Image 1: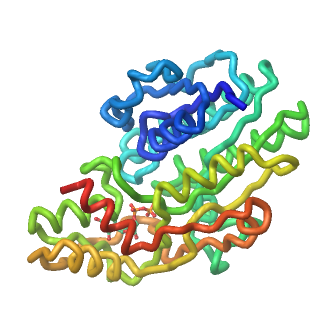
Image 2 (image 1 turned 60 degrees about the vertical axis):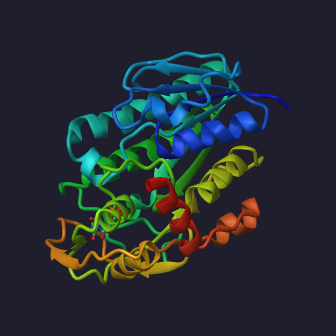
Length: 307
Ligand code: UDP
């Protein structure tokens, strides 16, 4: 059945893939984005579609649309971006959550919050399960994002308990794919651009820290499943449990691109988590979801896009 769907942050990397998928499944989509990290280029093919509407706006201010579903993605997600104006980042998470929840309450809509693996901070439990409460440094340089997203989760569950708001919360682990910005600052676009331009590969720290990378089509599939599953609130981890060291990612990108770049070591940023891997048993069981795209295949697609 055709639904009216609002996607905040819909001009961003994951948001634009989500808008595209929702439209292809026959829905009406409103995309709200302030274009801080999002871009109209990501939506170029969508703006001509009659069921798509782009609105330039900021979730730190209240918004009102007659919709059935709200996906709340608006927030810079790359450490480079979210640390540039940390006060704005914290406000975007906090006020964006309130405004999305107020709209859901007013319109009787279902609202999905895209939370993050960052709520686990520097995890002391590995892999991370949803019942792990995390180890976040509340005064560090990542806290504007981590604590902002934690506060948003709190608000979602308080609205659910206090007002009966129909909520869904997912915790997204590292996601990559086409339409990440070249200057995004995260590891995959950085390494790919460096490799393609035969520049030094900037490995932070010793490169033994791990991440688990999920291809964007898998992530988007999980968001849609979560939204359309009944009697569930989450939080549910969404990510690919295949864990790699950052050095392995650099080597794989060098191999696929055939680049002559060499790897150099740069200082490890403050509070950079040492290990990260989702336990996705809950997503498998409750959503029947499992990521399909291997890191190699996903990197090949992403490299083709960056070329
Ligand atoms: N990283 C790196 N070189 C880069 C960018 C990132 O070695 O040019 C490392 C970073 O220190 C971290 C991992 O790659 O350990 C993932 O960083 P990213 O910024 O992509 O996301 P995070 O998972 O830290 O939020």
